[in-house]
Structures are given as C-alpha cells and as structure tokens.
Length: 414
Image 1 (cartoon, rainbow, N blue to C red):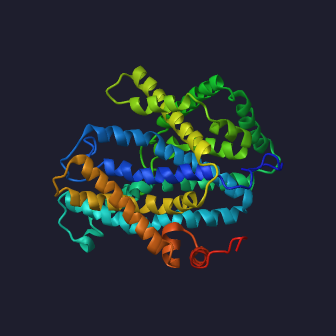
Image 2 (image 1 turned 90 degrees about the vertical axis):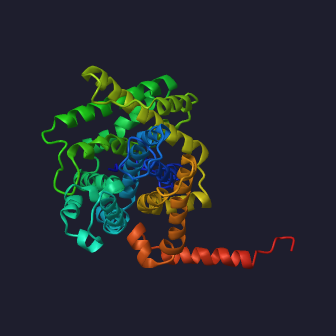
Image 3 (image 1 turned 90 degrees about the horizontal axis):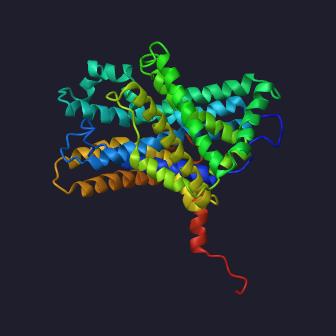
C-alpha cells in the first residue's frame, strides 16, 4: 500500500479535514436513524404512528453520502497507518479500534435493542428466555446482530486485504508503482473543473459496473457464511475504499479531489434534492440509468463534503479533536438509544418535528455524557468501546488544563 520512494509516500501529518468530515457524519447518523422512527417507508422501527414523508427524504438523502464517505475515509487512513506501522501493528490497531468495539456493542446494546424489537413484535419470552430461542438464533445466523455496525463488519475484510497487499507485494514492484502512477495521472487530467465533472461521471460509471458485475456472481445476495454479509453488500461500497486508498497514496490526487470548485455545492444540492434511486417497478434500461444517476449523486455529494471540510476545517483545533474523539462513541451507542427513546415517544402526543428533535438531541446528549464521564475516564470502558488505551494521557491533559485555569501564566508585563 505504500511505495519505495519518499516523495510518493503519504505525508506524516494529521488530516484534520478528513477526520472532521468523518466525525461530523457520525454525529449526523443520529439524525438519520432518528428519522427512521417517523419515516413512512420504515414502519418497523417503532410502533409510532406519527409519520411524515419528509423523513423518508431525510434518511434516503443521508444514505446517499454518509456510509460511502466512511468507506473513503477507511481506505485513506488504512494506507496512512500502513505507511507508519508494521503489518502486525496495523492489524493489532484495527483489531482494537474496530474489532473490540464491534464485539462489545454487538453483545450488549445491540442485543438489548433486538430484544426490544422482539417484544414489540409480540414476543413473550423474557430476556433470558429469548437467548437461545429461535428468534435469537436467527438474529445471529442472519447477520441482523450487527444492525448499524455492518459498516465495521465490511471494513474488516478490506483492512485484511490492505494488510495482505502491504505484506506480499514487494516494494518497488510494478503493481506498487502503478498504484501511485495512476492516481498521479488522474490528478493531472482531472484538475480543471470541466475535467473534474467528467471524472465524476467516470466514477459513477465505475460504481455502476461494480454493481452489475457483483449482481452476476452466483449467490451474490446470500450470506457468504452464516452471520456475515452477502457478497453484494460487501463489494458495493468497495470503490469508495479504493479511491480513499488512491488519495492516500497520491497527495496530488488528494489535492485534486479536495480542491474547492464553485459549482460543486450546487451540484451536491441538486443531487440531494432529487435523490435518484432505481426501483423494481422501473424498466431495465431506465433502472440502469437511475442506478448510474444514483452513483453520480453519491460521488458528487461525497467529494463536495471532502472539499467543504478541506476548505473550512483544515486547521483543526481542540473542538475538532474532541469531535473526532467522541465520534466513534456516537456511532456505537446512538442506535440503541434512538430505539429506546423512540419507543418512549410512542406514548406522547407532541408535534412530529418536536418528537424528532427531542429524540435526536436526547440520544446525542446521552452519548456525549457517557463518552465524557465513562469512556474517557475508565481504562476498561475506553478499551471496550473505543479500542484505545490512552486514559493516562487524557488525565494528564485534563490536569494541565485545570492547572492553567487555576494558575494562569503571568504575562510579560507582570
């Protein structure tokens, strides 16, 4: 994943803009899943009868760009980690940062949420009785156990693939040189606004071809093995991971992707408003066109987000650092809280916009409290829920800030 030349290796710096984009989108996930409580197309989320078509538009709009951006960022930072760590250290880091929180949430909050769904669907067993029941077995065999964590499940084989390439593809090989030369070349030819628009179209064509090819694989929609995912779902987001890898390998390609272009906000707004999706009711040719339009809309919004954060969040700062630290907790915890709070809101008769606001803010605020007073204060919780072991460093920083407030430094005049 890296090259043998120092000039083409990823720069040893912190990418506050890309980290900020990932963090904000993880916070947006709260609103996305809160919207499912009130969306007519998602009546299974809770028994709430307060529904409005706006929330269908909201959640389908968020789905256009939230997860694809996560996969781009996943590929980008995988390369950065591999450029600075041995393969074994990289795998250990990914195990801690991805695998441990995945397992922890899957067997705790996800099981609580899935039990509540079982009860809401008419299940009569208590929680202990539910464990080992046919419904419980189906939850694990079908892959439903992952719920919103399917993103992490998909990332794991992509990380393994990146590690295998790093381990077994020789430094200075043709493959490694091409992996840098191609994005370097794309950076040059896609530099102008017109060429970049064509590049967006080509990205959409690539994604469409990826879907069509994946759809031809026998058993593509069936689980690869019980409890995992289908091949189709696993590869559907892979192009975003690949472009993230390319952006990390080629600083010039990354610069082309994040370069501010005045027409992109309008293009992204149009894509978000129209929200093209293919449906079974459409004819084959029109469905293919809508699939292409969908992928074009996705790439347009994803790259606009990267450009926006590069323009306005490039310098980082304490707030950006805190946001990045809290982002994983927000992603992990909020889903169960949305269901629990959404379940409670079934019994109130508030205006739908007020219920949605209370649900979104309440779930996010609860996660922030848990993150600040549990995850950031106890070694065990930090490891299980964030995959980190940096509590001592956090405590030192907290003590330093407290000392600065208590004993402010004297100014030169004093």
